[in-house]
Image (cartoon, rainbow, N blue to C red; front, side, top):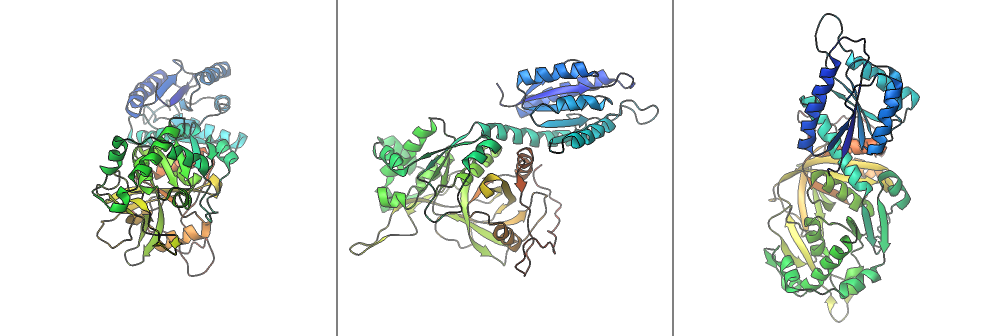
Length: 484
């Protein structure tokens, strides 16, 4: 069974002379083809609706079928009473009209005017009722493009509603910006967050049986491996096995407090383990960041590709780029050249042994690629997203997992500058972890915001004053409107 079911109802008024049955049949046939291409299930009533009793019957059938979204097609003009029946269905609603069958003479359908009427009625009777408009036949580029975004967004939301996240060890000490509201996340997205103490997790890791095959799986990912890392690979493998075992219990993502717990309790860092887990589709966020894990999960669902979480660690005001960086969660999904090395930051200091070095991290430089950035903030009430390009790896950068990122665009396809990005992050107090994934997915993210009634943070242009939100400089227009 496909993971999204879309319902269709066709509305009409008998005295409009256009061929309403032809319109409905064509729409259903073309939409059925798209359902195969975009992998969703289609449920529709064979007859057009013109009476309230028919509409109520159709509504009951849609409820029984548990459709995930409802398209209300105006094959012709129809009474505004009908759409009010379907607005009671608590799923995303899509209003749909088609072009007129002729360009002169008697008006055949008046389809667009009917959609206009329905939109206006819905806004009057329930200003909070959300809907999306569609115009044209399913094979038209306008319709296909809008439908593709909607299908991706709704599939992601449906997966989120079934997702469970495990927080291990709370958030890292001092990272008090990584708080979350479990009740809000459950109400808004349907996500369940469970918690496990680090002691419980450590016991599981220490009791894990590690085989040569487990170790080889880690080693073969890396082009280079240093001596200290070789001494740590069994512990790394035990961490991987433990998280995989927990994922089989029904968790789609993990937020693990990686420091200082792993250093103090297991004499290692788990960064290389996290890179492998993320590569294999088990979302694992660093430092106990639940909202970071959800941001990664959304991007992974949208792109059907592993995502990664990174900090912004440096700015280049000359070429307008930022350095995305993290300790060492290197992934084959983003670089062919991984190096397993000791952690860049030794510690703590031991009077007899000096600085205590630990391993292992997976270093990488992200390959040049277009990518989308996402951060859920304000405990999940707000989304911040932008797109850009990972630049070539020739620029100097710090040890760890990293890549210089520039050529930014906001969700409207408008270019902006690095100081605009800094200004936006600072003014809004956006957390320092950013989920990143290959490809352009901002349109889908915008739609997810819309259906979940989440606020989308816009770019706040930089000003020399300390006042936030002073729009004295518009972002630069771009001919490239990004993914749609």
